[in-house]
Length: 369
Image 1 (cartoon, rainbow, N blue to C red):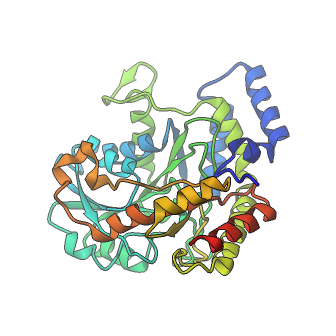
Image 2 (cartoon, one colour):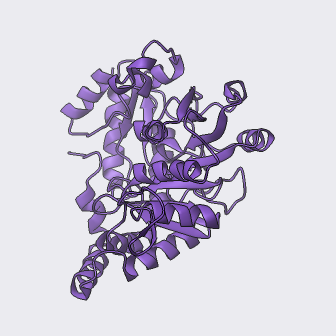
């Protein structure tokens, strides 16, 4: 049997008829940017997340970057201010901070959740700290009541990198409160491999702040709030009508797709019994964008699975503080982050996966020696 890691063609095929119809409607309408499809999806996604505003942009990195840029343009922050961020994250989170000439302050994750360790945040706060950016990495909620209390105590902004957690409900806050609505603003990526994925690049910012929403919309439109009038040195960052139309279709099925991911994750956790493989901790606050296991012989395990036709991924092989682009950090030591990046292996876990495929993956993993 062959079990691909993430067959996007199979995922798209689940709703192919509606997707093709939505694309055809846009093509035939002849309006391809900043039209009805974008307006519709922005309203739908804001309603779904539970915020007043959704501003669609070109990708998730732009969404992160524009949130921080807005605070600088508003005169609230200045270059050199600090943003606390998990050391264990995809590099885009950190790129958005340094691109704005802000200073990332890296904080270790917990080994049992892979999320930022809220017991280490307070000691990282300085007079220059302006925000905490949590990352719902792998699809698990990173927010805790302690993080919320610290932000309130020290008057810090709370931002969410929600690139991997579309549709996640944060039970710690409220049974119906979704990530993307927990802080002052949130960034979303609709990269094709996400739980809510487009057929190309796309992203969004969600917020309840009217002024912030207007600022981000302007910055993403060349710095213009009305045609040919430029208040800021902005950029061109926008979604196209085709991607917006596709996302409107897929949004209708997101909760059901996430439920299937939870079923697969629960089955893995219940049936993987190999002592050399550490399963992630079960949590209802997880949409399982990624199912990460830890194994000291990670590379051997990946090759073993590949030989049996099972696709896997490593998220991520090199931590941000060991990347050449941040060579000034290479002397830093983050042992928990480094262990995760040395041992993590992502197993197939998606809504198009069959029960037979899941059983085969489990059987192979339990036979690994």
